[in-house]
Image: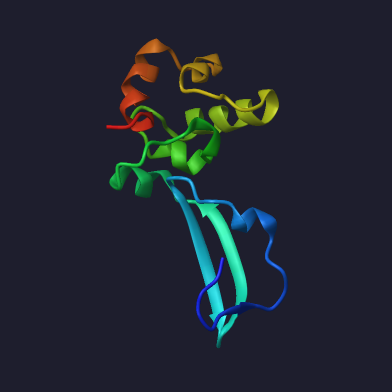
Length: 116
């Protein structure tokens, strides 16, 4: 990563040199012509929905889940707890392993997780 007249104070984290995926954000903090800091993270689900960027169930926080219709605070907590205990979901269908989520809810959530 290079920009004219901009340099790193120290070698960049190799993860920052990988291409961004849809829904990722890269914040670059400059001090003069030096890069003082870089932060790479997933944009919140509400913002992704607004920009028509499909969500991924393994990149969401409990707060992100609460943005979706039919998912309240308690269900969002259970989703996050299940993912921490049992590992990533991998797909929206796997979300059905969480108590309180059935095929109907998965079907209603599907448009948020697939490309329009």
